[in-house]
Length: 607
Ligand code: F6R
Image (tube, rainbow, N blue to C red; front, side):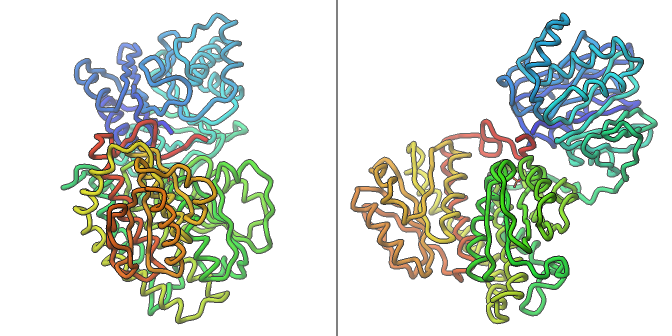
């Protein structure tokens, strides 16, 4: 997490830094700050609690001039979100540092530095980098050497940029575990956590690799690898479109992104279907020959998509499939069955745990690795053997919406592709393809339910707890519905497989605990109905999103919202939409910050 931007230029860079930070707010928005070296070699630092807008206002009120500067938007790890903990951190009014990541041995380093006479003004782990660099600078000739010595002492993850007011023509950047990209301009250079931050000033980038340190001045970029040897990193032209990023007619990005789903699905399907089949070049068949087992790794919403896919892989394709949360997988010893495919799912492609899990898997016996990802220039895409680009378009709202449904469509295409080598018949593939093709129109129909869902939300917003129920592949959809509700409305929500209710959670059910049920017309419908009766018998109030043929009817204990009938194969995708809209409208009534909910960030680049 945390977003970093840096620049060395002849022009004033404050506006470039602020514009860059605005693009990086998805990485954190607790506080923001910048430090700029002015022409008279003074270090000017401004920090504000809250979003980048506050910092921008501060810069308007007290302009800062200078061509070398660094900036940061924070997602707090060590120390609360206040001004003293905001970056940049400064040592002796000389060294300024921004950092993304976690320095795990910061306490030990802090103690050593205190013994050397350094005073700490923040609770952050980052401040040790600042003082340590200052400390080494007393015995080294250059800032580069001081940073190299500092880095050797750090344990943990960092993407960091360091400037020295006495050496204003350069910045030193270092990466281990947290991404950094160098942007190449004419007579000016930049650095950022994500190329997105720099698209307004350049489209030429090189991505630093693990352990790299770079010395960046206006006219040169020198990169050294983990051993300290000079290296070249390719300069590539960014493929990311600098698409306008406004909310259009919508009040929030999240609502815009919910309504963009038909288009996002059309984009992901375009060119990938040929004559009732998934096109041969959708996934490179030669690398996937002989796959007998699948392991999917992901976090959060992406993990829920993986859980749905497990049902599909096993029931449609006849391929065994395990799903695991990345932060668990990466720290346990697992057995890799023969001929296994490792799949990572990620909107951002930079989720630290998912990336670490991929790197671990590469040392295990996987036949190949595939990522389904929405960010073409991300670490997951660069490091996986095969990359499926989701083409969902940029997702700005912190709560994932369109990325989830597009991930599901991509997974269904993979199920069909791999299923051909197993039990999937041509007829069944045709059925999957037709179901996928019907999705955009089907989702349009569900989006038209918005007004009904809005009314429903009114009876919901004063509740403190809720339960989401589903069976089969709708169980992960219930999990996703609960996650959406809790993250944007702050209402406690839990999801259960409906059959599990009587094993404990039924004790929670009363009139103050709304129970949300997803009930498509599938072979588990009758079982689900029995579970619904169990809730009704305990005085529970239910909201049921049900197929119009399901037989559910509204009464005193149950509000039924009819969802258009769809092929059960795509029902998980279709039933996601009303749950997204419900969360959105509950959050709207509660007045929370829908697009940037408290304590969260869009790209989780720390573990
Ligand atoms: C929830 C949400 C998160 C992400 C998770 C993984 O709405 O957005 O749970 O799904 O942090 O992120 P990616 O998909 O970027 O790896």
